[in-house]
Length: 220
Image 1: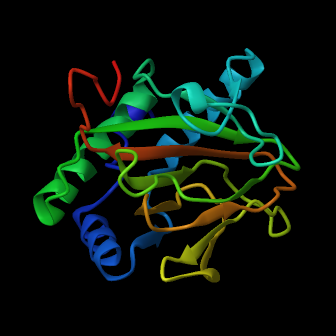
Image 2 (image 1 turned 180 degrees about the vertical axis):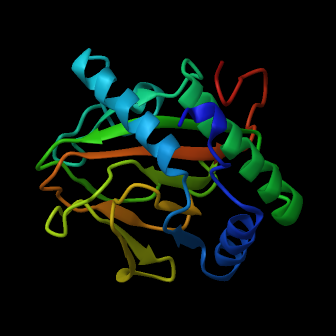
């Protein structure tokens, strides 16, 4: 089955459930959301990028504040750029979701950015927020999981914490292919537990246009 013939990554029902969850609690997790053929195509592309040494070590912070911190996160990434059919199919699905979020929640989302993320065995990402209130333009974060047949002892779960009580765990997301998670970037703390098995995903963010005084943000 080619990616051109896959079913959409999201149904209208999934859109509705996701939007309701964001309003009620600030986060959403759904299983079997992403089409299996698309997951497989994206996972294979990430494997090829890794074999070609086309991944870069992920850091923390933006711009001049960006630096590597292996004690905080240990994944390697490659930004999606529509260079493959699988990427284009995935990004088109995210465009449909962006439209649904804007139409129902009036978020003013401007664009979606995303990267592949490969966590080797032993890697983790300590608890953090994806955006700090009033200081960045990431509004809704997304994670799409690509590794099929995740082992029960594989580790690597994403833990979501209560926005009102950051010490209280409210969800633990198994990184199984087809699972999709999203949450409000400014308010929902989360972390990736140490993985005992190579872990493949796509992390993404819906962003507002924060350009002002002639400074483009997002940058082009």
